[in-house]
Image (cartoon, rainbow, N blue to C red):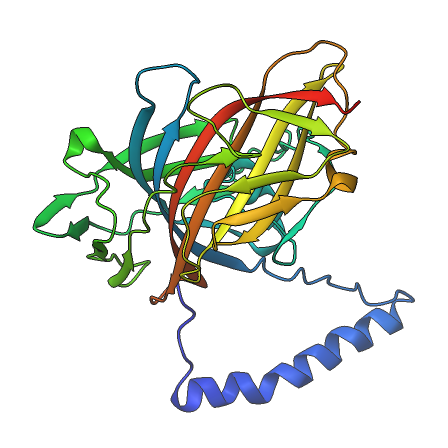
Length: 321
């Protein structure tokens, strides 16, 4: 409840009396031989809200299989959280959009993927609230469909609220080149908004060292250049290549951030850093074309609509001779 404004003589009387009342209290404390008690005012926590909308077209390729497995999903969440808890938000919600904090056409060193999920909060409060923003609809081409809400159950008193999601079963399909327009009706917490983004093309034929990934399992030779090719025209998007593997029970990952021009060579000094697993298991590699646009609305600190077209497949490591 907001404090009522003091008007007229009542307000003037209180304004005039406040300093004298404080002085009287302080004087009384001095006369009694005690210091006035210091009242500690804790700053109210600052809450922020983000809008995260993603559309993901995924293709899983198995060498020798008659056709790849494909799926398309659209999802949206609007987390509200304390500003200092942003790391917790990223950890709990996961990374729906591949990203790499790298300069274009560079690769990271292999790093262990650590479990950074926070423990249950001692005071029992929910750290992240996923807000309802009203009805969300998506239009693309001649199609229009709703993106329905689903309740996200309270997870260890850390995250609670609703998520929006739709897929092919909800008549939301992947149409390369079509503009996808998202519209939300808004609520008291978040104003109505709209965002539009053209769906990127598929990656086309992906090859490692000139060998199509559909024909046989690709091999990455440690200590040798790895040439990656795909169908790209440098539209302005970026492509993130990620390799994930496990060694001695620890998960590892390496990423490259590349211009979407259809060709990139991972230098030999980078592939030489790939750990040689004790057991020669298969490992996963993915190429993801990422396109993004920002949107704004009352009640949101920031909003981002991302479109991802990804191809994932298995690879094997070999040591160069």
